[in-house]
Image (cartoon, rainbow, N blue to C red):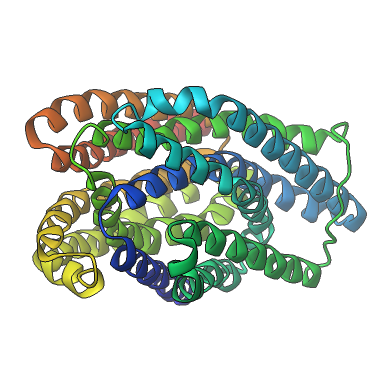
Length: 428
Protein backbone atom coordinates (compact mmCIF):
# COMPACT_ATOMS: atom_id res chain seq x y z
CA UNK A 1 0.00 0.00 0.00
CA UNK A 2 2.79 2.42 0.93
CA UNK A 3 4.61 1.55 -2.30
CA UNK A 4 1.46 2.33 -4.30
CA UNK A 5 1.00 5.68 -2.56
CA UNK A 6 4.64 6.63 -3.12
CA UNK A 7 4.37 5.62 -6.76
CA UNK A 8 1.22 7.72 -7.08
CA UNK A 9 3.04 10.74 -5.62
CA UNK A 10 5.97 10.37 -7.98
CA UNK A 11 3.65 9.97 -10.98
CA UNK A 12 1.73 13.05 -9.87
CA UNK A 13 5.04 14.93 -10.00
CA UNK A 14 5.45 13.62 -13.55
CA UNK A 15 2.04 15.01 -14.46
CA UNK A 16 3.02 18.34 -12.91
CA UNK A 17 6.20 18.55 -14.97
CA UNK A 18 4.14 17.77 -18.07
CA UNK A 19 1.70 20.52 -17.13
CA UNK A 20 4.61 22.97 -16.92
CA UNK A 21 5.88 21.83 -20.32
CA UNK A 22 2.56 22.15 -22.11
CA UNK A 23 1.80 25.52 -20.49
CA UNK A 24 5.09 26.86 -21.85
CA UNK A 25 5.20 25.20 -25.29
CA UNK A 26 1.52 24.40 -26.06
CA UNK A 27 0.29 21.70 -28.46
CA UNK A 28 2.58 22.56 -31.34
CA UNK A 29 5.49 21.35 -33.43
CA UNK A 30 8.09 21.62 -30.66
CA UNK A 31 6.21 19.41 -28.22
CA UNK A 32 5.28 16.97 -31.00
CA UNK A 33 8.97 16.65 -31.87
CA UNK A 34 9.96 16.17 -28.25
CA UNK A 35 7.37 13.45 -27.64
CA UNK A 36 8.72 11.48 -30.60
CA UNK A 37 12.34 11.94 -29.45
CA UNK A 38 11.50 10.93 -25.89
CA UNK A 39 9.57 7.86 -27.08
CA UNK A 40 12.63 6.70 -29.03
CA UNK A 41 14.93 7.27 -26.04
CA UNK A 42 12.47 5.47 -23.73
CA UNK A 43 12.36 2.57 -26.18
CA UNK A 44 16.11 1.97 -25.76
CA UNK A 45 15.97 2.40 -21.96
CA UNK A 46 13.07 0.01 -21.49
CA UNK A 47 14.18 -2.65 -23.97
CA UNK A 48 17.71 -2.95 -22.57
CA UNK A 49 17.20 -1.92 -18.94
CA UNK A 50 13.96 -3.80 -18.28
CA UNK A 51 15.15 -6.98 -19.98
CA UNK A 52 18.30 -7.12 -17.84
CA UNK A 53 16.32 -6.15 -14.75
CA UNK A 54 13.72 -8.88 -15.25
CA UNK A 55 16.28 -11.53 -16.22
CA UNK A 56 18.60 -10.71 -13.30
CA UNK A 57 16.11 -10.87 -10.39
CA UNK A 58 15.67 -14.69 -10.34
CA UNK A 59 19.44 -15.19 -10.80
CA UNK A 60 20.21 -12.74 -7.99
CA UNK A 61 17.84 -14.59 -5.65
CA UNK A 62 19.42 -17.94 -6.58
CA UNK A 63 23.00 -16.72 -6.08
CA UNK A 64 22.14 -15.00 -2.80
CA UNK A 65 20.52 -18.16 -1.47
CA UNK A 66 23.82 -19.98 -2.05
CA UNK A 67 25.41 -17.65 0.53
CA UNK A 68 28.65 -16.73 -1.27
CA UNK A 69 28.91 -12.91 -1.16
CA UNK A 70 31.92 -12.78 -3.50
CA UNK A 71 29.98 -14.84 -6.03
CA UNK A 72 26.95 -12.53 -5.75
CA UNK A 73 29.21 -9.49 -6.30
CA UNK A 74 30.91 -11.06 -9.32
CA UNK A 75 27.60 -11.93 -11.00
CA UNK A 76 26.31 -8.42 -10.29
CA UNK A 77 29.44 -6.76 -11.73
CA UNK A 78 29.47 -8.87 -14.89
CA UNK A 79 25.74 -8.32 -15.45
CA UNK A 80 26.15 -4.56 -15.03
CA UNK A 81 29.10 -4.49 -17.43
CA UNK A 82 27.22 -6.48 -20.05
CA UNK A 83 24.24 -4.13 -19.74
CA UNK A 84 26.47 -1.05 -20.13
CA UNK A 85 28.15 -2.46 -23.25
CA UNK A 86 24.77 -3.31 -24.79
CA UNK A 87 23.45 0.18 -24.03
CA UNK A 88 26.49 1.87 -25.61
CA UNK A 89 26.28 -0.37 -28.70
CA UNK A 90 22.53 0.10 -29.19
CA UNK A 91 22.78 3.86 -28.68
CA UNK A 92 25.64 4.15 -31.17
CA UNK A 93 23.85 2.06 -33.79
CA UNK A 94 20.69 4.10 -33.30
CA UNK A 95 22.66 7.32 -33.77
CA UNK A 96 24.03 6.06 -37.09
CA UNK A 97 20.73 4.68 -38.40
CA UNK A 98 18.32 7.35 -37.18
CA UNK A 99 18.87 9.95 -39.97
CA UNK A 100 17.70 7.26 -42.41
CA UNK A 101 15.00 5.67 -40.22
CA UNK A 102 13.31 8.78 -38.79
CA UNK A 103 11.91 10.07 -42.12
CA UNK A 104 10.37 6.62 -42.62
CA UNK A 105 8.97 6.36 -39.09
CA UNK A 106 7.54 9.89 -38.94
CA UNK A 107 6.89 10.51 -42.62
CA UNK A 108 4.16 13.01 -41.78
CA UNK A 109 6.66 15.56 -40.38
CA UNK A 110 7.96 18.37 -42.58
CA UNK A 111 11.80 18.68 -42.99
CA UNK A 112 12.16 21.34 -40.29
CA UNK A 113 10.18 19.30 -37.76
CA UNK A 114 12.18 16.17 -38.64
CA UNK A 115 15.44 18.06 -38.09
CA UNK A 116 14.26 19.27 -34.68
CA UNK A 117 13.20 15.74 -33.71
CA UNK A 118 16.54 14.24 -34.78
CA UNK A 119 18.46 16.86 -32.80
CA UNK A 120 16.38 16.13 -29.69
CA UNK A 121 17.04 12.39 -29.98
CA UNK A 122 20.80 13.04 -30.12
CA UNK A 123 20.52 15.30 -27.08
CA UNK A 124 18.83 12.47 -25.18
CA UNK A 125 21.51 9.83 -25.90
CA UNK A 126 23.10 10.22 -22.41
CA UNK A 127 19.63 9.58 -20.96
CA UNK A 128 19.45 6.24 -22.78
CA UNK A 129 22.61 4.96 -21.09
CA UNK A 130 21.91 6.44 -17.65
CA UNK A 131 18.28 5.32 -17.64
CA UNK A 132 19.10 1.80 -18.83
CA UNK A 133 21.71 1.34 -16.09
CA UNK A 134 19.31 2.66 -13.45
CA UNK A 135 16.61 0.19 -14.48
CA UNK A 136 19.07 -2.69 -14.24
CA UNK A 137 20.30 -1.57 -10.82
CA UNK A 138 16.76 -1.44 -9.44
CA UNK A 139 16.58 -5.22 -9.95
CA UNK A 140 18.50 -5.71 -6.70
CA UNK A 141 16.28 -3.30 -4.78
CA UNK A 142 13.15 -5.01 -6.10
CA UNK A 143 14.53 -8.45 -5.23
CA UNK A 144 15.33 -7.20 -1.73
CA UNK A 145 11.81 -5.69 -1.52
CA UNK A 146 13.19 -2.15 -1.15
CA UNK A 147 10.07 -0.87 -2.87
CA UNK A 148 10.02 2.52 -1.17
CA UNK A 149 13.37 3.40 -2.70
CA UNK A 150 12.43 2.25 -6.21
CA UNK A 151 9.18 4.22 -5.94
CA UNK A 152 10.76 7.47 -4.73
CA UNK A 153 13.92 7.70 -6.82
CA UNK A 154 12.17 8.48 -10.18
CA UNK A 155 10.71 11.57 -8.53
CA UNK A 156 14.16 13.17 -8.64
CA UNK A 157 13.91 13.57 -12.42
CA UNK A 158 10.51 15.24 -12.21
CA UNK A 159 11.72 17.73 -9.60
CA UNK A 160 14.88 18.48 -11.60
CA UNK A 161 12.89 19.01 -14.79
CA UNK A 162 10.39 21.36 -13.12
CA UNK A 163 13.25 23.46 -11.74
CA UNK A 164 14.94 23.49 -15.16
CA UNK A 165 11.72 24.65 -16.85
CA UNK A 166 11.29 27.47 -14.34
CA UNK A 167 14.88 28.69 -14.75
CA UNK A 168 15.96 27.84 -18.30
CA UNK A 169 12.85 27.60 -20.51
CA UNK A 170 13.11 31.14 -21.88
CA UNK A 171 16.81 30.68 -22.68
CA UNK A 172 16.98 27.10 -24.01
CA UNK A 173 13.45 26.56 -25.30
CA UNK A 174 12.43 22.94 -25.87
CA UNK A 175 16.02 21.79 -25.15
CA UNK A 176 15.32 22.62 -21.48
CA UNK A 177 13.39 19.36 -21.16
CA UNK A 178 16.38 17.35 -22.39
CA UNK A 179 18.70 19.08 -19.90
CA UNK A 180 16.28 18.48 -17.01
CA UNK A 181 15.82 14.81 -17.86
CA UNK A 182 19.56 14.12 -18.11
CA UNK A 183 20.38 15.91 -14.84
CA UNK A 184 17.57 14.00 -13.15
CA UNK A 185 18.88 10.68 -14.51
CA UNK A 186 22.32 11.44 -13.05
CA UNK A 187 20.77 12.09 -9.63
CA UNK A 188 18.73 8.89 -9.83
CA UNK A 189 21.84 6.85 -10.62
CA UNK A 190 23.78 8.38 -7.70
CA UNK A 191 20.98 7.60 -5.25
CA UNK A 192 20.70 4.04 -6.56
CA UNK A 193 24.43 3.52 -6.02
CA UNK A 194 24.03 4.64 -2.42
CA UNK A 195 21.22 2.17 -1.76
CA UNK A 196 23.21 -0.68 -3.32
CA UNK A 197 26.22 0.09 -1.15
CA UNK A 198 23.98 -0.36 1.88
CA UNK A 199 23.20 -3.83 0.53
CA UNK A 200 26.91 -4.65 0.34
CA UNK A 201 27.21 -4.41 -3.45
CA UNK A 202 29.96 -2.33 -5.02
CA UNK A 203 29.79 -0.85 -8.50
CA UNK A 204 32.54 -2.66 -10.36
CA UNK A 205 32.71 -3.28 -14.08
CA UNK A 206 33.98 -6.79 -14.70
CA UNK A 207 34.34 -8.35 -18.12
CA UNK A 208 33.29 -11.96 -17.90
CA UNK A 209 30.62 -14.12 -19.39
CA UNK A 210 32.17 -17.44 -18.33
CA UNK A 211 30.06 -17.57 -15.19
CA UNK A 212 27.09 -19.87 -15.94
CA UNK A 213 24.70 -17.63 -14.00
CA UNK A 214 25.74 -14.56 -16.01
CA UNK A 215 25.22 -16.56 -19.19
CA UNK A 216 21.79 -17.47 -17.85
CA UNK A 217 20.99 -13.78 -17.31
CA UNK A 218 21.97 -13.03 -20.91
CA UNK A 219 20.04 -16.05 -22.19
CA UNK A 220 16.93 -14.99 -20.27
CA UNK A 221 17.31 -11.32 -21.25
CA UNK A 222 17.29 -11.97 -25.01
CA UNK A 223 13.68 -13.19 -25.41
CA UNK A 224 12.50 -10.66 -22.81
CA UNK A 225 14.21 -7.89 -24.79
CA UNK A 226 12.54 -9.17 -27.95
CA UNK A 227 9.12 -9.08 -26.31
CA UNK A 228 9.67 -5.64 -24.79
CA UNK A 229 11.06 -4.31 -28.09
CA UNK A 230 7.98 -5.47 -29.96
CA UNK A 231 5.69 -3.94 -27.31
CA UNK A 232 7.85 -0.81 -27.25
CA UNK A 233 7.28 -0.29 -30.95
CA UNK A 234 3.58 0.29 -30.32
CA UNK A 235 3.93 3.95 -29.12
CA UNK A 236 6.23 4.62 -32.09
CA UNK A 237 3.64 3.12 -34.44
CA UNK A 238 0.96 5.29 -32.79
CA UNK A 239 3.05 8.43 -33.31
CA UNK A 240 3.82 7.44 -36.90
CA UNK A 241 0.10 7.34 -37.68
CA UNK A 242 -0.57 10.49 -35.63
CA UNK A 243 2.10 12.40 -37.60
CA UNK A 244 -0.19 12.24 -40.63
CA UNK A 245 -3.01 13.94 -38.74
CA UNK A 246 -3.18 17.47 -37.26
CA UNK A 247 -0.34 19.49 -35.74
CA UNK A 248 -0.30 18.88 -32.00
CA UNK A 249 -2.04 15.49 -32.22
CA UNK A 250 1.09 13.62 -31.07
CA UNK A 251 1.35 15.87 -28.00
CA UNK A 252 -2.41 15.49 -27.38
CA UNK A 253 -2.00 11.70 -27.53
CA UNK A 254 0.79 11.87 -24.96
CA UNK A 255 -1.15 14.17 -22.65
CA UNK A 256 -4.29 12.06 -22.95
CA UNK A 257 -2.23 9.10 -21.78
CA UNK A 258 -0.58 10.95 -18.89
CA UNK A 259 -3.23 10.35 -16.21
CA UNK A 260 -3.83 6.84 -17.58
CA UNK A 261 -0.10 6.18 -17.30
CA UNK A 262 -0.29 7.36 -13.70
CA UNK A 263 -3.10 4.90 -12.99
CA UNK A 264 -1.31 2.08 -14.82
CA UNK A 265 1.89 2.72 -12.92
CA UNK A 266 0.01 2.85 -9.64
CA UNK A 267 -1.74 -0.47 -10.24
CA UNK A 268 0.09 -2.41 -12.94
CA UNK A 269 3.71 -1.50 -12.30
CA UNK A 270 3.28 -1.41 -8.52
CA UNK A 271 1.56 -4.79 -8.36
CA UNK A 272 3.86 -6.39 -10.96
CA UNK A 273 6.97 -5.06 -9.18
CA UNK A 274 5.85 -6.39 -5.81
CA UNK A 275 4.65 -9.83 -6.98
CA UNK A 276 7.49 -10.64 -9.40
CA UNK A 277 10.09 -11.56 -6.72
CA UNK A 278 7.37 -13.63 -5.00
CA UNK A 279 6.44 -15.34 -8.28
CA UNK A 280 10.16 -16.07 -8.82
CA UNK A 281 10.52 -17.65 -5.35
CA UNK A 282 7.46 -19.87 -5.87
CA UNK A 283 8.76 -20.89 -9.32
CA UNK A 284 12.16 -21.79 -7.84
CA UNK A 285 10.37 -23.97 -5.28
CA UNK A 286 8.12 -25.43 -8.04
CA UNK A 287 5.08 -24.57 -5.93
CA UNK A 288 2.74 -24.34 -8.92
CA UNK A 289 -0.52 -24.61 -6.98
CA UNK A 290 0.39 -21.68 -4.74
CA UNK A 291 1.64 -19.68 -7.74
CA UNK A 292 -1.69 -20.11 -9.51
CA UNK A 293 -3.61 -19.25 -6.34
CA UNK A 294 -1.66 -16.02 -5.76
CA UNK A 295 -2.06 -14.93 -9.39
CA UNK A 296 -5.84 -15.39 -9.56
CA UNK A 297 -6.38 -14.04 -6.03
CA UNK A 298 -4.63 -10.81 -7.06
CA UNK A 299 -6.89 -10.52 -10.12
CA UNK A 300 -10.26 -11.17 -8.50
CA UNK A 301 -9.75 -9.66 -5.03
CA UNK A 302 -7.70 -6.58 -5.94
CA UNK A 303 -7.00 -5.83 -9.60
CA UNK A 304 -10.50 -6.03 -11.10
CA UNK A 305 -12.39 -4.10 -8.39
CA UNK A 306 -9.82 -1.30 -8.20
CA UNK A 307 -9.18 -0.92 -11.93
CA UNK A 308 -12.83 -0.99 -12.99
CA UNK A 309 -13.68 1.71 -10.42
CA UNK A 310 -10.67 3.75 -11.59
CA UNK A 311 -11.78 3.49 -15.21
CA UNK A 312 -15.27 4.71 -14.33
CA UNK A 313 -13.89 7.58 -12.22
CA UNK A 314 -11.57 8.78 -14.99
CA UNK A 315 -14.37 8.57 -17.56
CA UNK A 316 -16.74 10.60 -15.36
CA UNK A 317 -14.27 13.31 -14.38
CA UNK A 318 -12.02 13.35 -17.45
CA UNK A 319 -12.80 16.93 -18.48
CA UNK A 320 -12.28 18.23 -14.96
CA UNK A 321 -8.96 16.37 -14.60
CA UNK A 322 -7.57 17.77 -17.85
CA UNK A 323 -8.69 21.32 -17.01
CA UNK A 324 -7.11 21.19 -13.54
CA UNK A 325 -3.84 19.59 -14.66
CA UNK A 326 -3.15 21.14 -18.07
CA UNK A 327 -5.41 24.08 -18.98
CA UNK A 328 -3.21 27.12 -18.49
CA UNK A 329 -0.81 29.22 -20.55
CA UNK A 330 -0.63 28.00 -24.14
CA UNK A 331 -3.03 25.09 -23.43
CA UNK A 332 -6.55 26.18 -24.47
CA UNK A 333 -10.12 25.03 -23.70
CA UNK A 334 -10.25 23.46 -27.18
CA UNK A 335 -7.14 21.45 -26.33
CA UNK A 336 -8.87 20.32 -23.11
CA UNK A 337 -11.82 18.92 -25.07
CA UNK A 338 -9.56 16.85 -27.35
CA UNK A 339 -7.25 15.56 -24.61
CA UNK A 340 -10.23 14.69 -22.38
CA UNK A 341 -11.81 12.56 -25.13
CA UNK A 342 -8.50 10.75 -25.74
CA UNK A 343 -8.12 10.16 -21.99
CA UNK A 344 -11.55 8.50 -21.71
CA UNK A 345 -10.75 6.13 -24.58
CA UNK A 346 -7.33 5.28 -23.11
CA UNK A 347 -8.99 4.53 -19.74
CA UNK A 348 -10.73 1.51 -21.26
CA UNK A 349 -7.42 -0.38 -21.26
CA UNK A 350 -6.72 -0.09 -17.52
CA UNK A 351 -8.16 -3.42 -16.22
CA UNK A 352 -6.81 -5.37 -19.20
CA UNK A 353 -3.35 -3.79 -19.07
CA UNK A 354 -2.88 -4.48 -15.35
CA UNK A 355 -3.85 -8.14 -15.72
CA UNK A 356 -1.66 -8.39 -18.84
CA UNK A 357 1.43 -6.98 -17.09
CA UNK A 358 1.05 -9.14 -13.97
CA UNK A 359 0.61 -12.16 -16.25
CA UNK A 360 3.71 -11.03 -18.18
CA UNK A 361 5.70 -11.10 -14.91
CA UNK A 362 4.41 -14.56 -14.03
CA UNK A 363 5.57 -15.91 -17.39
CA UNK A 364 8.96 -14.22 -16.78
CA UNK A 365 9.20 -15.99 -13.41
CA UNK A 366 8.57 -19.44 -14.93
CA UNK A 367 10.93 -18.73 -17.86
CA UNK A 368 8.19 -18.85 -20.51
CA UNK A 369 9.83 -15.93 -22.27
CA UNK A 370 9.49 -17.19 -25.83
CA UNK A 371 5.70 -17.26 -25.36
CA UNK A 372 5.80 -13.60 -24.27
CA UNK A 373 7.60 -12.68 -27.52
CA UNK A 374 4.84 -14.32 -29.57
CA UNK A 375 2.11 -12.50 -27.62
CA UNK A 376 3.94 -9.19 -28.05
CA UNK A 377 4.28 -9.76 -31.79
CA UNK A 378 0.54 -10.48 -32.10
CA UNK A 379 -0.16 -7.25 -30.17
CA UNK A 380 2.06 -5.23 -32.52
CA UNK A 381 0.29 -6.60 -35.60
CA UNK A 382 -3.08 -5.83 -34.01
CA UNK A 383 -1.88 -2.31 -33.20
CA UNK A 384 -0.83 -1.61 -36.80
CA UNK A 385 -4.04 -2.71 -38.52
CA UNK A 386 -6.29 -1.19 -35.84
CA UNK A 387 -4.39 2.12 -36.09
CA UNK A 388 -4.73 2.09 -39.85
CA UNK A 389 -8.46 1.43 -39.81
CA UNK A 390 -9.49 3.51 -36.76
CA UNK A 391 -7.32 6.59 -37.47
CA UNK A 392 -8.92 6.86 -40.91
CA UNK A 393 -12.39 6.81 -39.36
CA UNK A 394 -11.88 8.51 -35.97
CA UNK A 395 -8.67 10.52 -36.31
CA UNK A 396 -6.42 10.76 -33.24
CA UNK A 397 -9.15 9.25 -31.03
CA UNK A 398 -8.99 6.11 -33.16
CA UNK A 399 -5.30 5.66 -32.31
CA UNK A 400 -6.16 5.79 -28.59
CA UNK A 401 -8.95 3.24 -29.09
CA UNK A 402 -6.54 0.97 -30.97
CA UNK A 403 -4.24 0.82 -27.92
CA UNK A 404 -7.10 -0.08 -25.56
CA UNK A 405 -8.36 -2.83 -27.87
CA UNK A 406 -4.85 -4.25 -28.28
CA UNK A 407 -4.44 -4.75 -24.51
CA UNK A 408 -7.90 -6.28 -24.12
CA UNK A 409 -6.96 -8.88 -26.76
CA UNK A 410 -3.48 -9.39 -25.21
CA UNK A 411 -4.99 -9.93 -21.74
CA UNK A 412 -7.29 -12.64 -23.11
CA UNK A 413 -4.40 -14.42 -24.79
CA UNK A 414 -2.09 -14.24 -21.77
CA UNK A 415 -4.72 -15.69 -19.40
CA UNK A 416 -5.17 -18.68 -21.72
CA UNK A 417 -1.39 -19.15 -21.97
CA UNK A 418 -0.84 -18.96 -18.19
CA UNK A 419 -3.46 -21.63 -17.55
CA UNK A 420 -1.79 -23.90 -20.11
CA UNK A 421 1.79 -23.27 -18.88
CA UNK A 422 1.04 -23.92 -15.21
CA UNK A 423 -0.92 -27.09 -15.99
CA UNK A 424 1.99 -28.32 -18.14
CA UNK A 425 4.46 -27.80 -15.28
CA UNK A 426 2.20 -29.48 -12.74
CA UNK A 427 1.99 -32.58 -14.94
CA UNK A 428 5.74 -32.72 -15.51
